[in-house]
Amino acid sequence: MIIVLKPDATEKQIRHIQERIKKLGLKTMVSKGIERTIIGVIGEEDILRVQPLEAIEGVEKVMPVLKPYKLASREFKRESSIIDISGVRIGGEEVVVMAGPCAVESLDQLKRIAKLVKKSGAKILRGGAFKPRTSPYSFQGLGEEGLKYLKEVSKETGLPVVTEVMDPRKVKLVDEYADAFQIGARNMQNFDLLKEVGKTKKPVILKRGMSATIKELLMSAEYILSGGNFNVILCERGIRTFEEATRNTLDLSAIPVIKKLSHLPVIVDPSHATGKWEFVSSMAAAAVACGCDGLLIEVHYKPEEALSDGIQSLKPDKFDELMSTLRKVSRAIGRNI
Ligand code: PEP
Ligand code: MN
Image 1 (cartoon, rainbow, N blue to C red):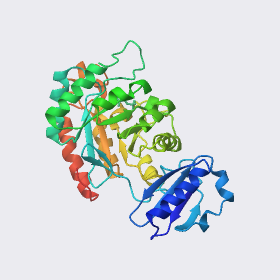
Image 2: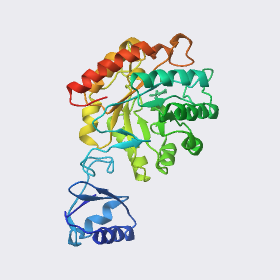
Image 3: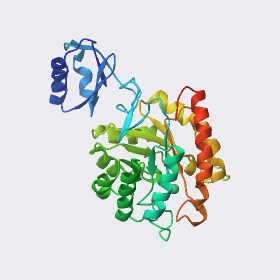
Image 4: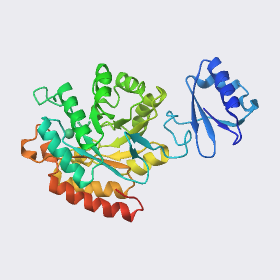
């Protein structure tokens, strides 16, 4: 249920409506748009159907939200959200490129890659300290040591850092080091993890599960939003289909579809979507043309020695070339990089 307020509704009236709803055992979330303020009601809202809420001063209309996600929906917030990752804005005119190695392997490796991607125009450094590997025998990441390197390199380069958190018990730790959390495809429906990051104020990049529908992705976002953290960025990273030529199938249509359904920014990860470096650049350009708000790209100066995802990592010169292509594509659609 959403309550659309009159354009001249006062703060006092807003508080009054919130208190009324709270007394009924429900939670409210206020969205102040340019033209209208909307109050989203969450919880078992059947009780509201018999309450004459439209009689309360300041209320223009009460509308049921038929979709199962409410706070993530365009109905709740008409204007697109802009999420700020330590000064870098995602969801505005600029298309933000986040790049780095799949895994943090050493301080030197991270520093070297961070400097290279920054020089080419990346605005955010990404690298995993906790790695969700299919095999327990594969490199699992450096853990807290990796987080320390991320912080150090962030200080030195001025690039904010994004890193994955896999365990609800590690949210506090990762929060101390990172500028934004990444929730990986395999954890998109780890509801305890979603609830835990929902308690923080830090931006969360939520990746689409490899077999998840767009609706399920938005329901997972709803977990974070309903916890009070509105700083959610959605990431399309390819879904599993019958096709075997690529690691996953990049669902480019997810970009306009999500933009229609939700106010949250959408970024694309062409590295995990294709799984092969030679297909990354064309899919990155296509994603920008389709209106994504940012990209996540894996870069390594020696892919053949990378401890994870070397096959899909771009070498720095290829990344640099890609950045010039992306500048042209973004200019053509009235955006910039
Ligand atoms: C990653 O970003 O390194 C990663 C493991 O991605 P995904 O969760 O999309 O597989
Ligand atoms: Mn990876």
